[in-house]
Image 1 (cartoon, one colour):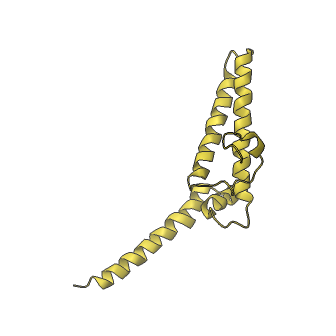
Image 2 (tube, helix red, strand yellow):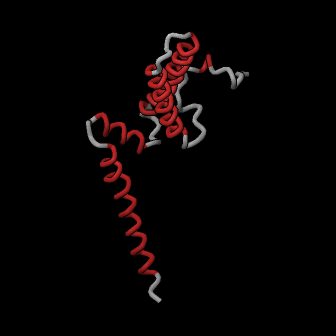
Image 3 (cartoon, one colour):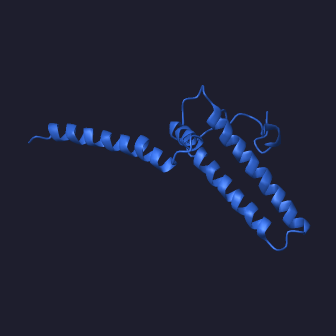
Length: 128
């Protein structure tokens, strides 16, 4: 039986098999941004020559690449039709579109129209 704490043998596993929550993408995105920020701070620090900062930099680079690979695995999964918003936003960025405009058109307006339709149906039922 595999030890869940031993992630070294599981680094290259596809992200779909271990996914347990819908918050994984947002957690991975936040982790990527956090790691990139820490890498930038360490690189811009005046004391980058000591061994502890180099060790910390390498640790953050490794974790950044690991989180990025997990995101890439999620984005490449064609057989799994989940996460259409994430994949749509990625394709919008790949096509040099503004992801905020894409989200407004494909998500916000879609649900706003559905809400208006539902409100109209409820108004029709609530005549009295």
